[in-house]
Image (cartoon, rainbow, N blue to C red; front, side, top):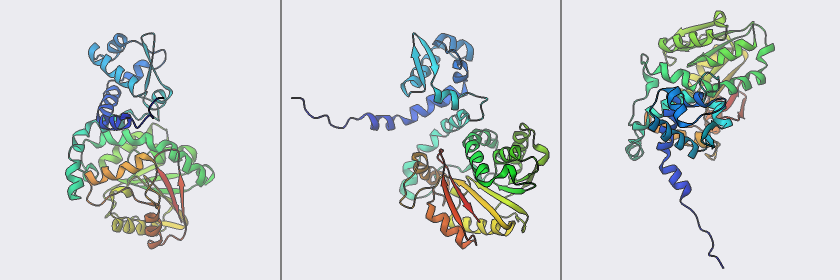
Length: 333
């Protein structure tokens, strides 16, 4: 009679070596390995030649990617899995390779997390507070892919395509991906983005690739201090910003949105949101640690927090919708 099988260390070991996996993925993305394998695949020597990296380096990264399930190996040839093909090939709108590179570059920050956990204070620099930083040129395009499917989903729910000559304000809009998607769906609409000057410059270039730049405007400045205006917009977007703000700051910003919206207008919040019991998508549940690392008061906030803040800001109706991505949509009127 065999002894009962107990727990194995596999999951714990996977987590312990998580930094390895992130670095291997970021290296592969940086050197275009997934693009080199797209189509018929290749062996290590072929990948090294296509990408200009060392044969030893190619083999190490290919082994690692196969080990974590992003590549398959048949008869000496490596091929992208469907996930790698969909989300890691440069040039595709859903590519998360840039985000992988950004995460690899921030691994040294995570070494300081134990101290942040002990003190409750950030131990790494928050680039979101820097108006003029070259890092924006890396980060802004890198995270745009996260919002593509969610922006499409929101557009369908709000009926953007048939909404006519509407106008929206996207605060902290980054790449301009929301306006790019919505303007492409509605040829009568106009989008306005408020962000740092360097970020707005990036957004103008990004939106232009969709052929809708003539209906995209930008306002340079800090959204904490810039006036949003009164009754000017049919919709407003607050995407992946609330997590870096304190509860008091979010209430203040939601009040500005309420004033800026026309009667009957809708505010859309897109962020990593937890359930009231503090459960949710694994990425969202880990995101609070990222906020601890780089902000003084940010967090992965709960659905209940958004309901409370939005009600305090004057919104009478709040609808929370989960998405297939790590992000949640909050619709407020």
